Each structure stands twice: as structure tokens, then as C-alpha cells.
Image 1 (tube, rainbow, N blue to C red):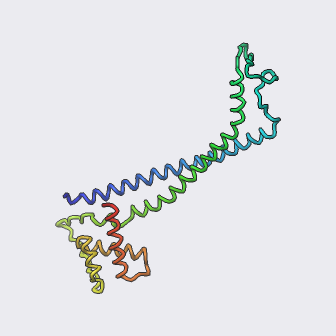
Image 2 (cartoon, rainbow, N blue to C red):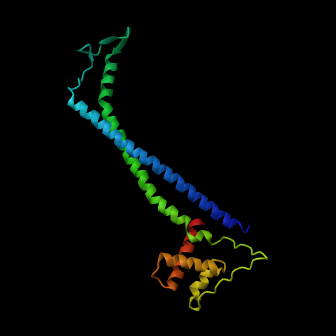
Image 3 (cartoon, rainbow, N blue to C red):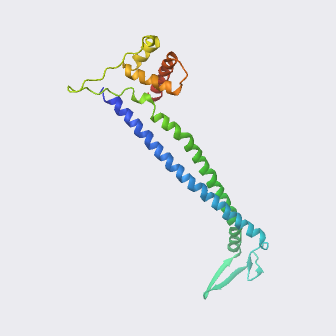
Length: 218
């Protein structure tokens, strides 16, 4: 196996997390516009319904020249010198569409509000988790150490404290291929997360987190 392959996988994971974060943020912005558009549609539909309620009651039978139509009536109207013919079903369909305009606008606006809120809540839930996953120290465990050049001497790694050389610490060193600097970095990460815990407990938590991360990405 190429020694650079784990590092390339780690970089690919970071790129995927960044792309997912960008997509979620774009969806959240679209959801905000949908939410406010829905609010506006509900207001417009409500105003239309209020006007319909305040106006004279709409006839339940289609009218032609002020006279109620029957099922066999053909209504002929003239506009701009042209004659237009409408049957009873045509006029009835127009009457029903006029009644449904306000209700349809309110329903569509309500759907936009609910959908926008749902997307916003999902984005608020996922973004912090993607951010934590992109900053997880387990993504850096398998990164190959840089090869020292002849002109630069590598910095010596300080040995761990004597009291830290325990069974758990040796197990952690085994998991990170003997790299004490990586082990100490994982322990420091747990110390930042749980500042009140002792070193032995921090080592155990570092082992648990490392095993969990590797199992999750295996």
C-alpha cells in the first residue's frame, strides 16, 4: 500500500465535509427566502379572503348578462368587436377558480413556511456536527511524518511522564503506530474537551474516541 494513501483519504474526507457544509448553507439560505415568501403569500391570500368576505356574496350559479344560466344556456359576450361563447360548465369553472384563489395562496404560503422552517432546523442540526467532524484529531492520526532533510535536524519528541507509561498508554501507542507525539495530541484533545479529568481517564477516552472514529470510517 502506498504510504501516502491514508493521508489522501483524510484529505478527501475533509473535502467531502466542506462540500456538504457549503450545500447545507445554500439550502438554508434558500429556505430563508422560501419562509419569507410563504409569509408574504399568507398575507396576500388572507387579504384576498377578507375582501371576498366583505364583498357581496358570490352567486352559486354562473351569470350571463345579469341573468342566471341553466345547464343548456350558451353565454355569448362581445369584447373588442369579437364574440366569445361560454357554456354553463365554462362559467361554473371560472366561478370556482375565483373562489379558490385566496385559499390556494394561503395554503401554498403555509407550505413554504413549514418547508423553509424544516430545512433551517436540519441545517442548524447538521452544521455543528460537520464542523466537529472536520476538526476531529482522528483524521490526522495516519498522516505520514515528513522526511527530515539533511540540513534540518528533527525536533526531539519529549518522552511521556513516567506515571503515564501504563497499560492504557501502551495500548494508545500501539494504535498510533508508536508515535508518542500523536498520542499526546489525542490526550491533549480530550483534556480540552474534559478539563477536569485525570490523565489516565483522558488516555482511556482518547482510545475510545480513536477506535470509534476508525470503526465509523472503516
